[in-house]
Amino acid sequence: MHLVFSKRFGLNPNVTIFDAESLGVVVDGNILADKEMIRRNLAGLSKELVLFPVNCNGNHWCSVMINLEKGSVAIYDSSSSSYLTSVRSVAQTLIMLLPELARPRPRVQTYESGLGVQLDSYNCGVYVLLAFEMFCGGDPLGHLHKKNFAVFEIPILAHVYASLSKKNRLSFEV
Image 1 (cartoon, rainbow, N blue to C red):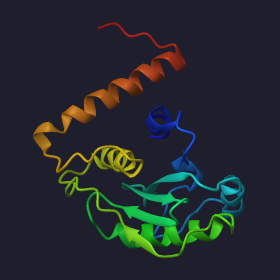
Image 2 (tube, rainbow, N blue to C red):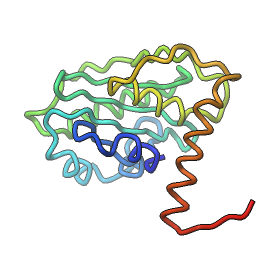
Image 3 (cartoon, helix red, strand yellow):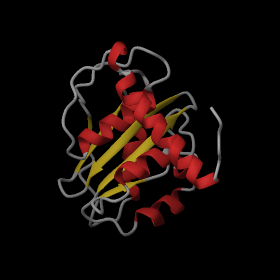
Image 4 (cartoon, helix red, strand yellow):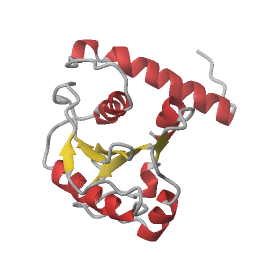
């Protein structure tokens, strides 16, 4: 997942993306990774948009999105499930780990993407990517329907495949 996010947002100096592994799998709202390491990684931030993909209990992708310039924190869950409570707890922890001068107010809002509720059990990562895109100023897409969801899945998968092929020098015959 981090590969796709890095390819999409990596050239924008105003966007910082954290690898989901830096938080570990979040279990019931608890960050399992070393919090001091996270604090060190957050140390140089001041005005950026900060994006955290969050793996909840190893089952579902959600996110924490912080706009340091505006001092706002948003959480996102494509299925509007009980994971929102866990992600809110993660956001509160991350706020306290930010540098004091960059720390936003502790109020956390649920991000309304306008994408609609995820109806399947496997596209949560794609929804998180689209929510990140919109949080960073991309155009709103409106509600997603299963019949047109492949419009997003295929290019993303092709991009990942191309990146992995170059990185690992893989060759496949079709």
